[in-house]
Image 1 (cartoon, rainbow, N blue to C red):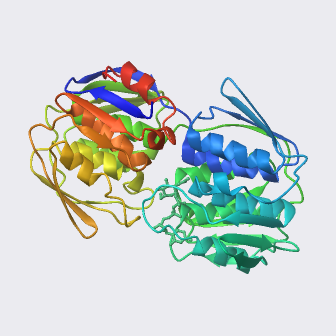
Image 2 (cartoon, rainbow, N blue to C red):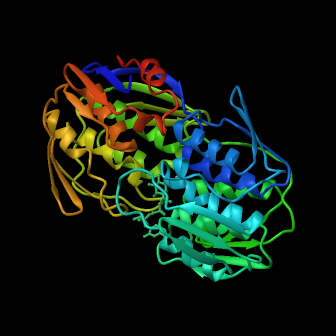
Image 3 (tube, rainbow, N blue to C red):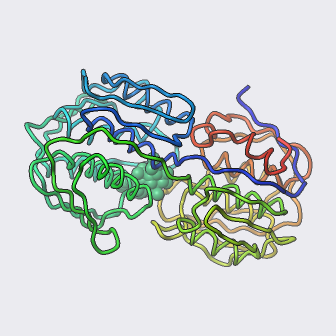
Length: 414
Ligand code: UD1
């Protein structure tokens, strides 16, 4: 059944462990293509986007085995660089296979990638960087072919710290001839995870200026390695915000508070009280959250766009008026009409959402239109009076490994 039913209105109480990070593991899986040998990943989340990436790896000849949280990828016998449209159009992150395949084989052909419907999401920065690195691009219909006689290390300055472009350049540069320097690089923890993984496989990468400058000295070969995928900061943030909306006290183990500084500061502003120790985060929600007069999404370490929709669900119930500005993706208020169906008072003015907090919202039949908006509907449903039916759960399954299990462990009725 492609839907989720939640009976809301009861505070959360319980503990759950946070899964491995989707946005960290996807580029690491692409990086496995660069390794002449076997890559072993622990704590790999079993989510739809990872399954899609596994299919892409298999389509180019990788042997993939997945047993009890341990995923192995053997790219010793790559047999092609043409990525099947079926998977590429399903997931935007498939574009990061480009840098990896170019680095290893010098050729890739790919349909323009798909992904969440949260804006235009062009890949111009990825392609401009590849061109500087000696790659020739040819476009025929919706298929893009990229070829090179050998990637050459280059100086690349990004106009915006794009996460995907930074990852693609790192992947293309790992086996390149000479040194690549990325200035204005993205500093998200997922970039750090990719660099750690590659360094463990023998790559030469160092960072300067707090990660804004990344230097990659190309090596001849990457070797077999093992890596544990770090925990998913967006899943942790989603459950913390779920508790802020529904009330109660929850504990999240393996949640990394250091990666959630901006989110925890907003939670504190809304009246949440939390403690962090070496093993996780414990949060007690206030009776009713306080409004957030103004918040703008930012690149890391700012408040993440991937937790913006979930915050709207909390602010829908806050005391007073809040304003949330979306600065990363232009189409990220798609969940608002669905929250309004549940009784929220939200209006959109350009890139800003104005939220007039109400005392209660109610259950309704709503539809998820993308991953994080779907998670926001689950949060609203946990706090709402009555029952909520959320259609299109497959969007939520792209990023949450076991939402029902986790919400039940946290005391929600799902
Ligand atoms: C990644 C994350 C996504 C997160 C986003 C921002 C993964 C799999 N996805 O997406 O969850 O919301 O970072 O933190 O890790 N842009 C261009 N041209 C380009 C590339 C990007 O204009 O060539 C624009 C995008 O349209 C967007 C902004 O830059 O407005 C940010 O995009 P980017 O950082 O690249 O996000 P993704 O890597 O797609």
